[in-house]
Length: 330
Image (cartoon, rainbow, N blue to C red; front, side, top):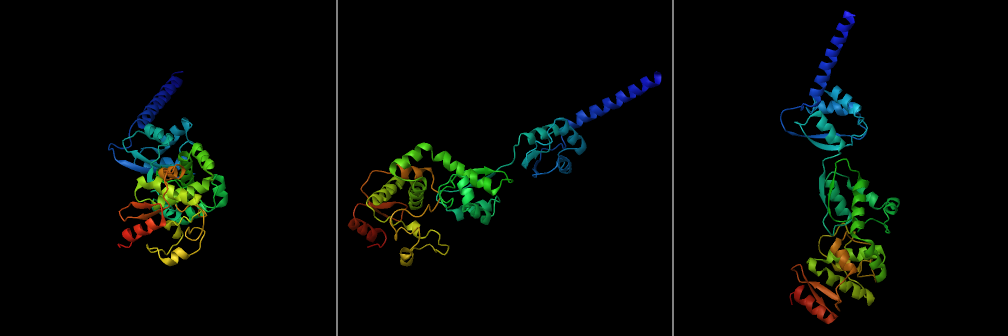
């Protein structure tokens, strides 16, 4: 009996000591300093690998104990992949809680208004989220476009310009879906009803808005520019919008020439009546609003005054005088 008691006491001491060591280790930071460490959990990575990496980075002192604790908490399958910014003075318990909260590090991506798909793809690639070819292939993938409920042959015009925050682990599809979802948060069902009342499809109103966006030098002029396009459409006049002339021209050098104006494409509004085949850029909320709620005017023409604003005219004669004054300096 004495031997058994001695064994039990010894076992109790061992368990107690081990328990205290485990408790203390789980409540002790891996390092005394507060340096920030970028730590990545890759998709499909095992708990054992994650724990080993945490130990090698000096964030925890015992990978085996951390693995045991995570399994004890039944959290082994709930650690989201992603990039985390962890402080070295966090305890293993705090690190686990941070990982379980999924507070992955996010990177900023800003898409300005008026960019086309190629320009948007370039910015996405520069941010390291997706290469340009994959991005553009998805933007013309009809199955993907249909799945996103976009009634168009490409995603041009529907990649909403905004500032986004993505983790490094984001996929190209997720980036594009977020942009399209944002478009539909801005373009409300009420706006859709307004477009239908005006006799436009969703694609047509976005196409018109994209032209307004590209013609805009002074943002306050959007409703007036919209009024010119609406007035010309009602009179069945060609829209004659310069930005449509160069859409898709990879060799454009910055100056529109006569050969550009005469070229027949599905987008050149100098050679066709009505709207182009589709949008020529991604319009912002204000351009979309202007397309739906244009100013009331009798204007049919506008010409740049070379100071970001335009001169608006009601007649061709007045317009020609403005062209001579502001473009030809006569």
